[in-house]
Image (cartoon, rainbow over all chains, first blue to last red; front, side, top):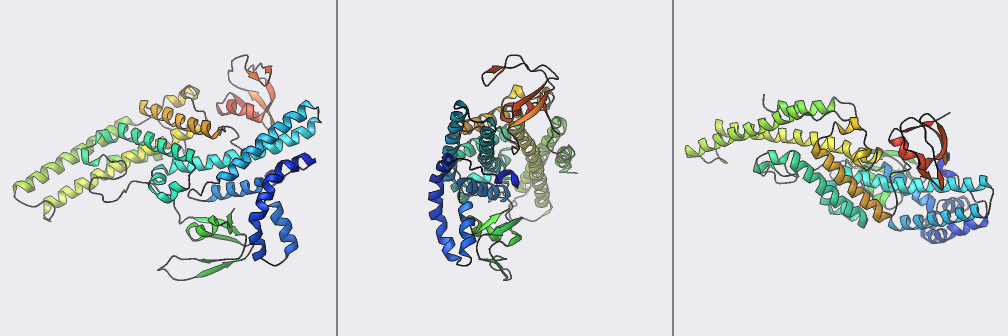
Length: 252
Length: 201
């Protein structure tokens, strides 16, 4: 993972650029720090290095890539990342004008490219998930509430386009009672033609703090797993879902 | 056997290479539709027969009832197959927008040949949805498809690229077989369209 870990802090000006996001994030992380009393020294360092927006974006991106369903949209983070990208772009232009060493400029440029890739890939992965489960995304309130405004507009248009495509190529040729996009026929009581994400799939996860998870759903047999900080588990997505959303567990 | 046509249609799709389109199998597709129509008319005639005999269609469990049921099940099975065929092709069409480009003329002719008119329309509609998202989000998502290792890459021109494209503030000359050292973001669209290839190692 060297690719995204390089963070060049060559001059003071860059630290300034990112200090804004940093100070916001420091506050957010504190409660977790207090909760895990042990080993304050190294935890402090780790939490500091893992609270820059780039790190947060990387985490959001990894979770989004590994999760089978769409996760809540990190709107604030995306906005901050966009702002910082613009700032760095401006800085780089200034460096070029001021005749800074081209090597140093290209290091900044590379760092910028990596951050931009993260941001683009994050948004792209989300759009691909929306495309894949578009009917489900708009049908389920939970999924819909996780989209940004623009993503909602996109999903609505997606559904309209694909439904139109289905109607024109298949459904128009069938009889009246078999023409629904979402139902097999008029007698189906539920929408039984909607592809949904498989929440039972397995994911690789690593915990950030001590978490207790029940491996089975209610009604099934009862078995509890305790994950300690740093433990890596191969686990059913459904089981870890809550912990992932609250940030206690990361997907890798 | 009822339902076999739909099955063959899905098999036809599945036998193709993953992520690649075959020409739309309109013969099999129409035959499947035709079978749906047959199922429907047979189903109707059985129901009419039951009504003429004074039987309640939904409560009677005689041979004719199960006859209609078989036709109904065959019909929805075929419908699912038809939809799955169109759906899976539509998925590939959407992927084209991501991997090749958002404009129909950008697609290589050998791909365009395999699309039906409706699929071309779908491609256009979907691309415009993507474009409006990117416009509103203020970010172009169609570049940077692979993690950048280096901001500059070496490329060789393998297709015909018109003269006089501006990159930065310089005019370029992308003659065929010439090699260039370009910004990754500048080169990516050409690579996606198969007009350039990246030189590695």
